[in-house]
Length: 78
Image (cartoon, rainbow, N blue to C red; front, top):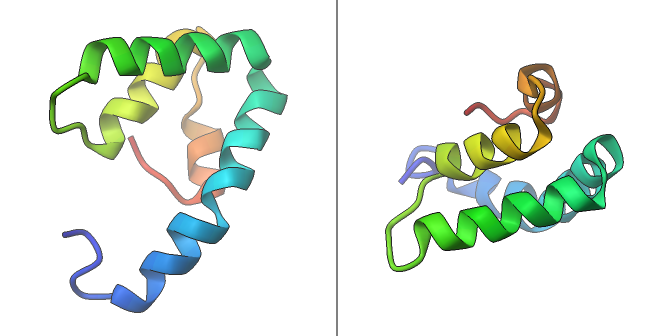
């Protein structure tokens, strides 16, 4: 629903920027923190309707540091 007013932005953001975002996050925080976050996200959100803020807060918690500047750099907001 966030893309109702700009549907032409959906594909570039989701399909072209998604993977590089996760690789940069792994480079910044390490593989262990990213794997921990993904595991926690799956456990906490299984069978639920999760939003982007749920994923971002899970990564913030697993990294044990403030990721706001990193998220801002990538154009995402928790």
